[in-house]
Length: 209
Image 1 (tube, one colour):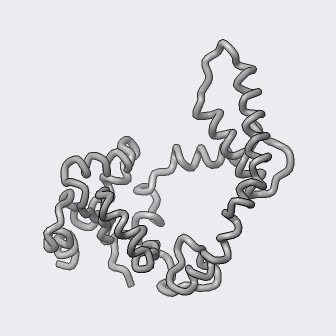
Image 2: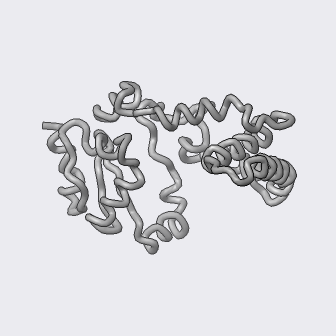
């Protein structure tokens, strides 16, 4: 009875959306390996309009692509909507190791204030030489393949990870096309299937505590 009632969450509020399945909600649609979530949401937006809802397991999610409403939430009333949704296995209260993407209330404001300097204009200027150096290395690698076909995505994966390794992880020198992190990240994003992993699926199927 709980699950059937939960599936009516958006319908009872007069908000359109895709029909959810019992227990899973719309999880199987948005976590399809062959049909990326972004394309699924784009199709639902075409079907149901700029404001609709769907069920991620037992969690109701509201999708908004109306610019005036987005401006109202993210700009005019940001103080009321800054909190991020909690992960299913996350503690109900913030603790010392809760990071900014999951923090709420005063803890979020404290972390936000501490991180502001890291993204200041001065900080961005300081990493410009690092970005420039990686860009030059990328160009050199591409020029070596002049006249040949190349996998552009692979080159930009290497370029991006080279910058992250130096600017965020403090690595010295470059490991472009010899960076183990690229292989790890590629394997994770290309081969990871949430529905096949109980840790990601199971918590979504039960009521929040």
